[in-house]
Amino acid sequence: MMMITRKTALLMMSACLTAALAGCGQKESGSSAAPAATPAASAAASPVSTASPAASPAAAGSHGAHWSYTGDTGPSHWGEMGAENAACANGTEQSPIDIDLAKAKVNQTLEDIQTVYKPTAFTVVNNGHTVQANAADSSNVLRIQGKDYNLVQFHFHLPSEHEFNGKSFDMELHLVHKNAAGELAVLGVMLKGGKEQAALAELWSKMPAGENMEGVKLEKPVDLAALLPADKASFRYNGSLTTPPCSQSVKWTVLEQPVEVSPAQIEAFRKLFPNNARPVQELKGRTVETDKDK
Ligand SMILES: [Zn+2]
Image (cartoon, rainbow, N blue to C red; front, side, top):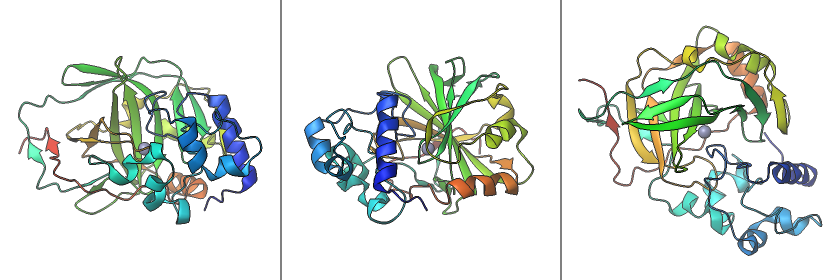
């Protein structure tokens, strides 16, 4: 379990200051997609800023580094932790969700998603909520219905955040993309115990054990094309970031086919993050579509 002591809170704040507008603490967010909080609102709501003499309006920005996955700062409290996080409690299109496979609506007009991925340099960071790999360039492209989104970063959850028929998987990979207009599209891939995932071997060997926003540059490029399943049948729905501030208007694509990672890889991640999954959220009238042929 991650204990947020005052010391770690200060460290997190300085990391956030260093990261400036780089979406600190917002895993789904590429960089500046999250709405900025007013300094007054977040200063009033943030225990970090009132406890720390180092707090400043800039430090008390929208990063919300004090949220967690358990207890008083866990998912059921995110919406109370500052006006900027209101969507976590009140949002009507929140993620993740439980996908009822039989109820997913077949949409014949949906084209298959296309991933134009190639070996790319990444830097691995530990943002206190997950292990995240930031792309050195924007050359990886996810194409959805003729629209191109560029990969910004990818990161992991344990157990999976999305569920299929009420069942979660060992882990979930989120590939976060953004288009020129700043719109986010996240590709979710279920990970299950099996054979070792070679495409993640170096990344796993260099995961920072503690909070580290500077990160570690990987020596070898990561080939995400090798990581994805050949069958890219998917579920699509409109959702949100799964971490504060839970911003909506995120286009979600969740692949039906899981990929394998080894039990040792799962356990290595579990040592750092024993549980970093937000519970599933209500559909609230949304439809999940699928490009599957039935
Ligand atoms: Zn995520």
